[in-house]
Image (tube, rainbow, N blue to C red; front, side):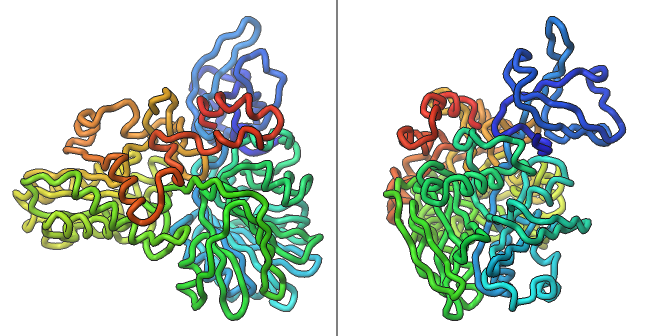
Length: 572
């Protein structure tokens, strides 16, 4: 039985007995039996527990009455099929380095952090809620005295669904075995058999033989550990197409292994510091902390990191690149490089391509929504021969996109985005291009529109995105989104809907109350090709492209090939 608070690995609907009139949920803490299935006939199928506390349904689903000949049911449409997240991880040989590396990767997740300390015949873990700095490295050294350990795996994460008290349980590292000590805002787990840190998301379809009874959390990572324990790293890499970049510690082995799926959707690099090799989601983790970038982990390859700081690697599969374009457009630090290509250079190329495609004659200046689009906005202004100006500031460096709920994101934006002093008078009566990296839900843009039109009395503001519309319905009729590790599920919950879903560009402009312009697919691909990345090497599923694992049919688990069409339709 999975005490996950969400569907068992990709089930699209729940059914449960109607315990009270619609909308009247129990006020006391209570567990209700939830059955996963597409029809009441599956009432006695696989099941998990749904937790209702304080009258709140924590799955984020919506209630509707469902009739049945013999029993009254409430249908819960699951809007949280698995924990969709964006993460950062590292492997290092000192606790100080592991801590510093994930602190440099904090932009990839801020809701939870964790470290696994690996010694000879021993793996111990700590996980805590909040940012990396919520735990002081001095105290971590007391918990994990250095003579006992030789390697450390660390992780930062943001959870996009589920109950707040589930954040710690779902935080990484995930483990098999071990003794758990809950300490309020952190958890200690000692003497683990296995531990893993993971960036990406793997659909239940690819590990359907793992029983929900085996796992204690709602994350795919724990299930992946059981796959590894059953099959070993070779079959794991061959049979799970993605999406993952990850590291695994096994008490039976001295080496920590790191793997990147053959598509390479999620980034990971090999680095060097103080004479020892490690791994991180981005090269910035090494370069900001006195280390060096060595190479990107080759897709389809296993890296073995020895306790002494050396490494070996074994290539098992030929790469079939499907790199996540959104890593360059938004997620990754601007000073990082992915697959050998500078994030800064890509964003400059996107700004230039956008200026070539869209350059109205009535514009007075170009600005941007802080902070990610700044490089592209400067490149746009230079290419178009327009004035560039910084108009907004943020009090905190956190990214509103990473907020757990729609309400949290709106609160973050409202409290965080402001006009610089004096800009109200400078911009009055002017026409502005407001550049953004993407328009997923439109929350940031609506706040910026309010500040420009009401605060500055601008004549006109064009909202211009250097990412094409996200979350559209593709030409094949399949609703798009991301199920590979970014918080953009194809079936978003109420309040999190894609602004572009089901709307024309004119309709989006009316919804945003200002002219909205997106870069074309052709121009975006041109920008990537200028930097050396062909269109064929990109995963563009969220903007209408093909499902990245469609070519893997012959390598999928038994029965998976026949379910590919269903997988695409459900987006699970």
